[in-house]
Image 1 (cartoon, rainbow, N blue to C red):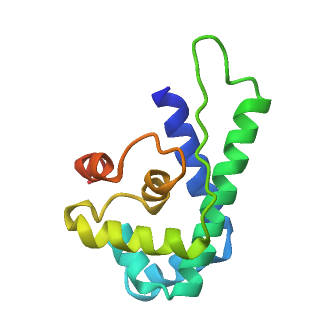
Image 2: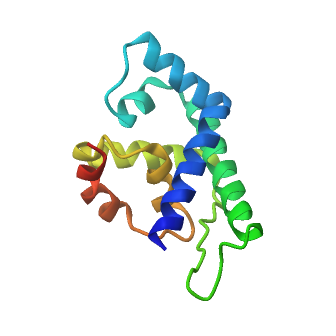
Length: 137
């Protein structure tokens, strides 16, 4: 299960880089020197760019799950749990901003992981993800 979750996360991040919001993040990082944390990058974006990033994260997640299922990743030993996102984009933009404000020590947690705790079917709570920040340092 962990291996799939990591693969899903990497697929989501790859999709983000290809979307308009991901390009804006790369530009912001280059403009200001490489930002040390995802929260720094997130805070440099305006709400429209944040919404674009959320769209990319959701699309990447949906695509990664569809590819994993179509590729036969599910079996008796592996259960695929795909996050669902039914709220409007502003809800996720606010949720990500709130996460970084509430858990400043978790500034290094990637945006792509933060949004998973805000999904309709989170695999982990935002609090639990914040406590794993040391993994990303």
